[in-house]
Figure 1: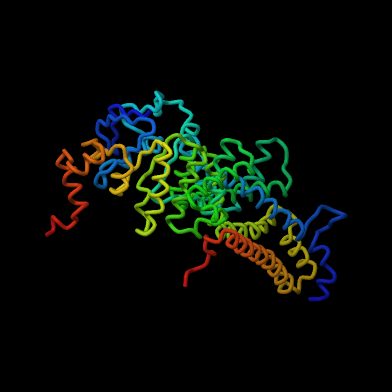
Figure 2: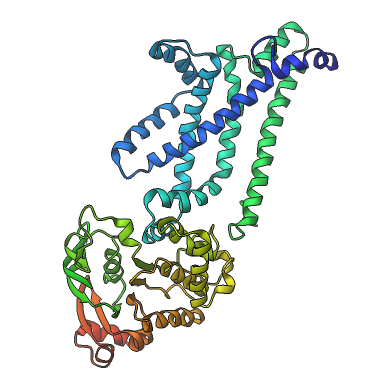
Length: 236
Length: 247
């Protein structure tokens, strides 16, 4: 076990970098972080579109959400991998392919979380903002979303954790993220599958657990700042 | 100032406002009363376009407020509206509730907006609660902050939709006190309320509604002493002796 770690830890962390492309855990973290950062705004936009008063906006987005949500992520990745180049005319690299697939897939899930969060805010909040003369967008930005996002936090974290783990699907299009690297290591030291994959599992767990703790810290901090909103836990 | 002309409104098949024709002058304090479901809340909600109308026209200072192309936001910012449930923004402090619209709509500098809003909170007796969140305030205090928030846009007209109905009895007085002061300062006010004492003392006129119709309009003295319409007589006797029918 120690021997495997000593031999392969650099490979595990960064792949063949700096002699080759960046890979391993660094690539996984980079992919997950970018996916989260890009998916959240997309999710908010799609979520707002889902409750738009205008049918021309609401209907197409609803269709997109239903379709993307109705197929496995693996299928979305294949689409991005094979379909995108045939449209754009040039080959997309694995990283971009995976990023696009993740952002789209997460975007539609986040859209539903955002939609639920907004619909959960009492109608009176919307009405009183409008009676002050705030427009639709200002109302969303200043009154509704700040409250809704806080309520959404646990669901958002759930989705973000799913995203971190979903980066492992990059394996099937040959993206050298951490699962791919682990499989490589396993073929080289093929009597130690338990250790290699145990270590891989632990790595994912640490990432996800870290995010959970960060979210919890954020929740507590918001709860302190806004004393009236009860910390989100079950009432005794 | 405000003119309702043959206003009708339907919720599906339900006729919520029936041929309402009414005129309210600048500086007038009008109390709208009537049994629940009589259309009184609907009436004042049509005045700032929270509710659309089916037919007829409503004009304020000669301008048709339900016409297409009206700048709704600019129009609404000139009308203060108070809700039964206060509807303060729970993620903002009392003072931030007050400065939100002035900062974002009138482009006031935050410091100037804060100063102006502090003066308003002082006017409703809550300057010392400026940095409290709504959850830290009682119902009566929340409603007074809501009044200060509405005043922050310096509206010439204030609408009150049962502002004291959600309050514990001991808090009703403090809100009515602020409303009285507003009336004395010459604010044009339309109040949907069950506070008959307030109506009698402050109102220039009482409008009685039932089933979407204005059945009676009178001075408070006349209305409370000798209501003309049988429904108004019934309503007042129900208020005064709630158990009369059952007995």
